[in-house]
Structures are given as C-alpha cells and as structure tokens.
Length: 314
Image 1: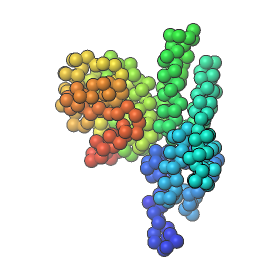
Image 2: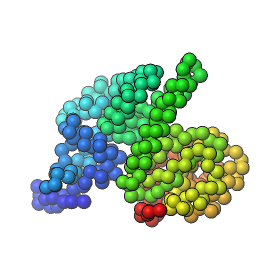
Image 3: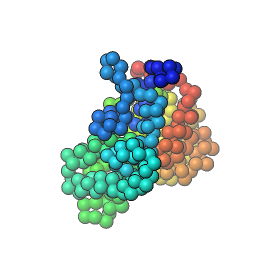
C-alpha cells in the first residue's frame, strides 16, 4: 500500500491493482478495460507507470459492480456515474437486454458448434464483467438451458456436451494459469463419490481461485479414502467436495466422518447436496457451504481466516 497527500495534507492510502482486485472481486484485466475503454476509473500512476487506487476509486468499483448486477451493459454505466441523481430512473429503463443479447449470441454459436464465436463472447464477457456476474448471468443459465434441451432437441446432447467440454477446458486452463499468481490457501477440489458434477465443481473452483485461493483439481471418481494423503502431500488447507445428488448412507455415516477425522484441515461440501443434507453433513463434522457464490466465499473466508496458508513448494 502506498500513500499520497490529500487536499487537507493528511496521507491518503493508495492501493495497487492486485489489492483492489482482491477487495472488489473484479480482476485486473477488467479494471484496466474499465479505465482504458470506458473511462470509468482514473487511478493515479507511480513514476514507473503502475496504477494506484484510492478508497474513493474502490468505492466507485463497488458501485459499478452494483449497477452491472442490475443488468446494465458496461457501456451504459458512465452516464449514471456522472449524474447519480438519474441513475435509478435511467438504469431501470436500460437494464433489460444486455445479458439476454449475449445469451442469444452464445446459444447461436453453440447451435452451430462455432468455437471461434464462443471464444469471442467468452473473452469479451470476462474482460468487461466480474467473474461471479458473468457466471451467474450468462454461463450458468446457458448450462441450465442446454441441460433442459438435452432430450428435447435433435442435437441437444451433442450441443450440451460440446459446450460443457469447451467450458471445462477454458475454466481448467484459467485456474492453472492463476494458481501460481495467488498466495492464499491451497484447496483440494473433488466430487463426492458417485457424483458427476465436475462442471459445477469447476465453476466453484474458478470463482474461488479468482479470490486469491489456489486449487488442486481432482475432479470425479476419486475415493474419499484417498483424499487424506492427497491433501497432506499437497499441503492443502481445506478440502472442497462438490455434490448434486443424494449421497448414500455409507458415505454420510462412514466415509465422510472418517475423512473429517483423519484430516487436520476443514472439509467443505458444496452444491445441492450441501443444501439438502445440511444437518447430516454438519453432524459429521464437515461444513456445508451456500449455493450462491458470494455467501459461499464469505463462509469460506471466515472458516479459513485463522489458518496458516503461506505458499509452499512441493
């Protein structure tokens, strides 16, 4: 953190772009795009050209995120920031088509198996909008629609598989690229036994890694009995298990408590399994997490707040 003199002569705290990204959940690429392409933020610069942001800048970023969450396009934000008294009235009129148009374009690209067109929509969305917002407003609804169309349409299964494999590659690659840059706790990610929710696991891991965590991805079909050694060898500070179906009584009553007992780090359960079996999971010493990204992150941060998570080499 740097500082400069305010108009009153007192030191003003200034923050580098990485710290702003951690505090706001908006990645550095998006912050730069908001500055260069739309003039929404005007950070100061060090003599070497590095961006420094004030508390006012950070508050502005939070306000932009709030406006975007209402459904506005990034190109519609600046007039509302310049005339805040009209923001509510204008915003309500404009916040209707942004995500719908992107979803229609994405669906058209999927229907034609056009990976280049999907790439353009994917990269544009993640460069202009916060990670959680893009997933919640564009990618998750698209996955839900494709799942519903799987049996109904002639090529429904092919379209769903095509897009899911595309996303698995993109999200997995992004997680692996981000891991070495992060310094937070390292977490092991896997699906519960007999649960095929790897797509949801990747979506959650993607969001969590965007908040400075590091991920060890194991995916599906890993026995719980093997996760103790895997987590210990990888020096993980937590185990994240994804589930969307009802676990067997043996998993809940035997395998899960055995995993919790053998590990010295928390075991978290995500997905519909956590929502439907919250009491049973908690009774075995594991920690169920909310379905939505924001409360999930808040609970995860709280649970891991006092752990030592200094990065270590293997």
